[in-house]
Length: 164
Image (cartoon, rainbow, N blue to C red; front, side, top):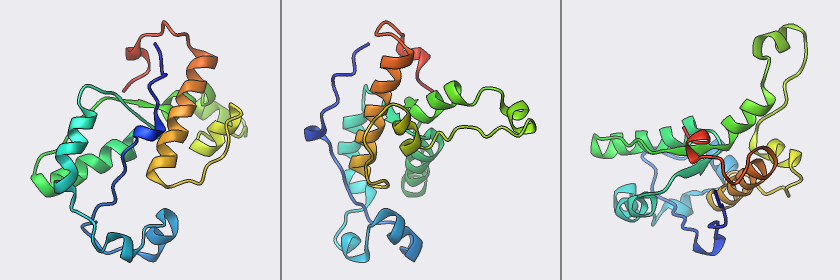
């Protein structure tokens, strides 16, 4: 397996018009303002390009329920049809490595390691990025996957052992 295909210069990123009003919390967290969405297209307008870019690929995400669920719900609301696509979830890979013991660990009063993206990256000596921006989160996640594979897997690891 080779992950040399990560190319930040080829990244794509869209701000699309949300279906609901922005809240003060969402503006603070995502740093997307009312002026950013004023001229933004609806998801339907960029969907053909997005789906073409996703075709034949496995998405790399940190927390598949959020990422896959978000796109699925957005498509259901707009088109009445959802989407299922394969993902490699770096958060789930971290959970496999650092959340062993589960209930017993908690009952013994031991604190589980955080598997948040920033905390996971720190374990591998990766630099910190500003969170909650599509491009920097994607790059952070891709770099984390490279580090996880380098440390815990081999280049011969089948893709099916990593995806959900």
